[in-house]
Length: 456
Ligand SMILES: [Zn+2]
Image 1 (tube, rainbow, N blue to C red):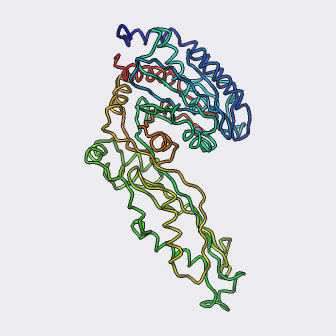
Image 2 (cartoon, protein in one colour):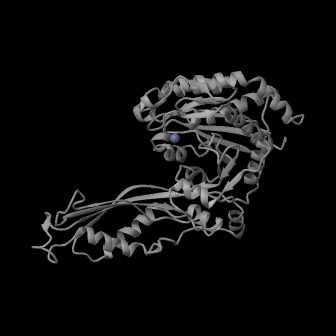
Image 3 (cartoon, protein in one colour):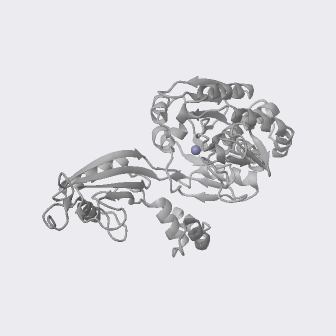
């Protein structure tokens, strides 16, 4: 760019455009795009494409096995850096409708918040990138970095076709960093930057004893008990402290650097408030232990266990069948298929008088981006510039997301910077996004583009 950009000029421009920014989001919310129910998704892709084209973004729809990806770019040959903005234009089903105070697809402002399905998750956050680019192009005619947009229509269905899409379009999606605005901020006016997320392996174990339930007296000590078999098996998989005993389970885990440990020690952690959120009396952990357990370590969790009689009173049987569902959150560099293989071998070696079957119910790879990268530091600085406040930087979300697509398939760093308010109620009735959070999001994207382009 010829003359440096003044961030004050940008702020003035965003102020002038506020009414347009509100109208654009309202129009996008009015267009239903419920991927789970196949309602309005293609029409929403068309609308989004036309909004992006109006913003000066070169846009096309690209087919997947499911709903299309809306892809856009603004490229200038003199630029060195490329940001890939990821978002999703599909929304959750609005049901139960009777719990909404106003029509989920007729956006309404109350108490400084925009109510409507998809406001926070993810239309208000996704369109913020588009409107930021439009404002900068209107002001200056070009951008100091290249931008690409990957907007999918199936995130609420688990991004089922995104990995093969990214695999097939690696050249098109080539970028220096993936930038996602999704989810809620850490607290009121407290921005955050997240460097990754845990992966997931979900399995089910089914144990079969006799072909029928048996009398626990007449057949006691004789008939096999599948519930006991699963308990015995699980005890060989995990010890009383939660250490996983499956061979090789911890082998691939990325060891955190001293800098990362130093960093998590400095993170804010309020054990009393956290205990209240979880619903327990107290949490006896240091900040370091809390974040190590939450984001740097895997879990082994019984999500459900069923067998025999659990109704009122007594029924003296030896059940014939038992099921346990186990989810494991995976830390950086653990691989769901590899761990599943190790579990198969573990169960194979386990001696039991019951037959035990293992089912794979789902797996997602974890993702982690190193804190020390220059480009990561630049994005953190840009969030600070936009909010006049240092963001909380989290090594990884405890939960699971599709970020491995960026770090593992595209091989680029990936950051998540939530723009929505902490009480956005995404997936629930009365989903909302604060007006000020929405407008601040547009500003934050402007700051990222200008700061990475060394303009501010
Ligand atoms: Zn969602």
